[in-house]
Length: 343
Image 1 (tube, rainbow, N blue to C red):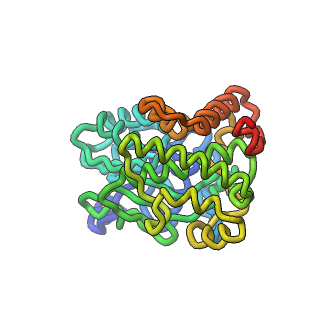
Image 2: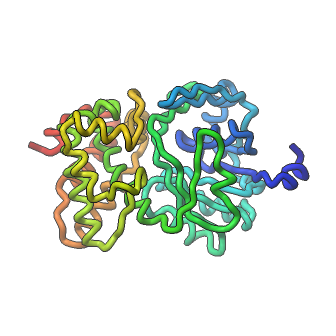
């Protein structure tokens, strides 16, 4: 499609900035939906995709191979100059740097959407991109890079982005990847943070997510950690919305987690589909010797707890255990719930 044809059709140029597991999967799904997609990636990823293409698989049985030329691959941020929509998927620690690259290279008319964990990334982007259309977003599902250009979505859910002009969600929605616009994103992001607190527990357990979640000992630990965090957020005056289903307020999730396994199985099936092989992104980070985002998850809760004089011993213990695992650089440690509790 020529530039003139693309403009006439209204098809945007979409650039995924920082295409790791989530970025490559989302970008691949958009390309599968015949969107014009560019991935801003590291050199090793260019080599992998240029040889293997992109293989998209998921918990529902999707298994689709995209040829290497289905996306444009760039390593130079100058590639941002052609973008109409920029999906930011870098780790939180790289947000300021990618914002500066966007400011230098991208057209100011581009829409910038943060599809990152944590609650502060959109604020960082806005601070550095004054006058730009910057939107917060939330990706509810888990993706693991399996190697050889394969990216596997292990859990369900639809992407949410902040409401704004231009029908951006409609432009990003393709078969198998639904995107919705919501007016207030911060409560959704805080709700996602609460759910993402389990990322660290899953990494410490070295278990598949389904195996972990179906074990009552782990669910009780998840519930206690979340309840502790909910008390902290309430003290800080922070509202939360369940990013999976608004029918279940976040304050009720710990109670659901404490249900007997037979009862929890029925409730969880209606709320979330989980692949038997799915693991958290933090498990993947530890396995590959990368720095995790624990500071943007448990670290945020611990910081707020200290600010308001509230104890958060489980979150603090998990935070320290993940930092120890990062320093050891030996992968997921395979701890038991009682070891994490320190009992």
